[in-house]
Image (cartoon, rainbow over the protein chains, first blue to last red):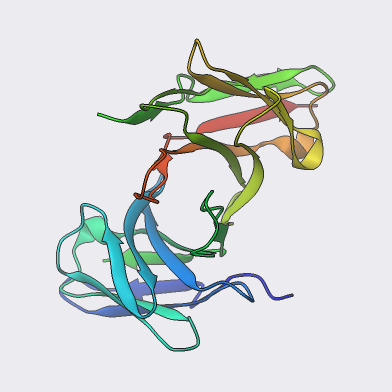
Length: 114
Length: 114
């Protein structure tokens, strides 16, 4: 049973560039959430996708956008990168029908913006 | 505002000694409570959750957590710490209702010394 996978593992970009991060949910899961974790901080909720639509969003600017595909995998796009976007980006999958919203996390993508 | 507090940035304990990582929350109603662990350069791993019932919840790797409704706390415990338990621990709370977002603490770094 494959867990949550994310690619790439590491990424280095420069200010102003755009980046796309990818996530495949745990087998059987239909919901994907994205988090940003800055160094020394807890995860900050970016948004959640279900049925290919953004269902909830945290306090992030429109530069952060996403997509969910019919196979439930998801992408996180960040435009006009800022130095402050450097962080570990975590993807978590869950089942929309799970009342407890237990989330399974991938290993993350470490984004460095220079 | 709803929040989760982990009052200790770091906890140090000798191997073989009991450990406690504290978590308190400010959320209306009876929320669902979670503990996650994060090893260096890894994603978050689920440890345990409290939904209802017995106040003492047992989880992975010998960890347990005690729910105290009157003190709105959900402290993580282990009777005998291992060096391999050294990691970052996060407490998370899901308030009841249609909002499925988790509210996260800032994390506590646990160092178990040999």
